[in-house]
Image 1 (cartoon, one colour):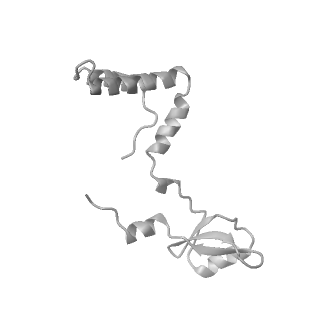
Image 2 (tube, helix red, strand yellow):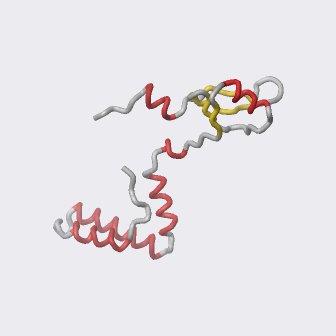
Image 3 (cartoon, rainbow, N blue to C red):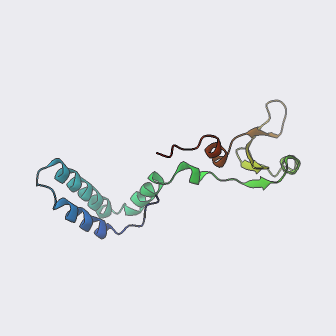
Length: 132
């Protein structure tokens, strides 16, 4: 589930206030809700809400969303031509005929080579998440 990182602080505080009405003052739930509300209020007061929004977004964004494939090739031959052209940069992740490879420095000599690096979708097929 994706969460709205551009949430309205006042709306969130209103919801926390309404939820807190269901708990006895001084209870562990009351304390937890108050701590959360005051923390959010503090972040807004010190004008760090944008920083918090980015933290919140990154906290709930799956790592898979951060993976960027720089090039896609139909064949290994196309990929090798691109690699030999000098256009590749160390660390780039490319897709070749549906498989992932990372561009790395060659061990001996100069130049770059491909290192087989499975893409997230390949790993998901091989190791599907539990459906529970």
